[in-house]
Length: 356
Image (cartoon, rainbow, N blue to C red; front, side, top):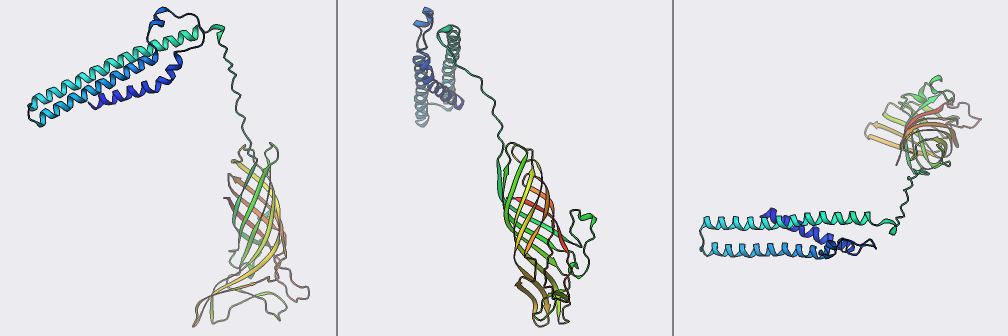
């Protein structure tokens, strides 16, 4: 019974949806005279209305008969066996009527299809179709890639600046005791394609922090001292961490090669950067008798270089890159009158970035 109702609903929906389009077919463009049989036949609209009415009548009759049968069952005017037999008869009759209507619809559809084909064949020169081939879509070049870039890396202290880090001896000594120095940066970048070439120009601005780890030594800049130096802690404290972070406002500029139309493939970039010192922070973490764990942060310039500058290169894929940068500025610039000066090492950072 459920299958029959679903079939009836489906047929009704098809006829209702097809009616507006079929009405348009009742009045085709001017064409050669159609056969007499076609002129005398029902219009497509009237056929759809008639078949919909027949489906509604079949369902209505079935519903009334089933309601009468249910009343007989409630009043106990019919036995259980007779009721089941009667219900099967009603279901079979509804199924047969729907199948007959379905056959009519299929035959009508075949006739309609033949009529449409005949219409197309007999249009001749009465109808001109202005059909132009579609032009292939042009693949667009991505013109810009902007975003926030995060840089995280580790810097190595070198005796002399060089673009070939592997060929230079790293600095050894108290100023690089544990070799845990790091580089961190955050930048706003603008990258533009140069015409339709694989070349891009990248510019940006942001902040970079260079952290120097001093191991078990403390950076000391006494007011009356003639030099900045590292000193050992007193016996009363147990030193856990000692470092200095120098912060710079930097402007990186690079030329990027990325042949991908959308800028999502492999890329290679090279360029430089310049920066201005913002300040420094010395951090000492130690454990002291009677005080427990203590963290001291001291802000100052610490005679750090006023300017930063250098070169960097990156190899990337999509929004990720790995790269290397070499600073050509000395970390500290101290007065010439000082009798002792800190070693003049240079930063060479290995880093990774991600564009958000």
